[in-house]
Length: 264
Image (cartoon, rainbow, N blue to C red):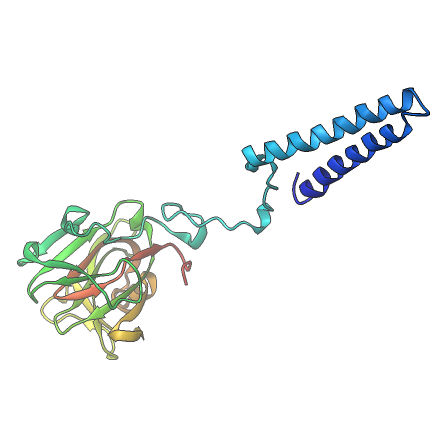
């Protein structure tokens, strides 16, 4: 029973009472009819009382099931269904433990002594402030499933020492050739170019992401497009994502990994 429960109970109770009272009124002149009135009337009143007691003791039995079309189930961040998530977000909710115990690794420098703090001014929950020296960096190597991601979305605050690197596996027109290369992301509007001194391994890609409050910016990285703007000038195409590297002091939100054009 749903919303009709109360009217039904009231109908049974007062209807049964009316039947019983009618039997009482007929008793001086009739013999059989009053008995039927007492039986049916008493049964209706008893049914109403029993139903009310069950409703109070086990209310969920009588609560109408919600319309499944009106229920929205949150997407599972581990699935590949809604929003095209290719893998878990790269999260930082292990604090106060160091994320170096949760997938991040020291790339070089004194990153092992970095300070990991909650970023209180972040526009996205779960963001962290990583305090590292300019000559220090940490890496996050993607699992095989997450490596299939082609789109990254996150919020980040750059400082004077911040550099973001992405290591990608590239494919050439020759299917037998495949190499891993770096793309260095810096703030700016200049055209991309091979990184001076590292021309064989790295391209520098200046970007100007959408600004957010408190000097944060929203990064929406399309790896196939960024590879086309950099290594694509030498005939390479994007194959998969390998490593995310953070250098220097930086504030960053959880990194959401998507496949295709999902997650916009």
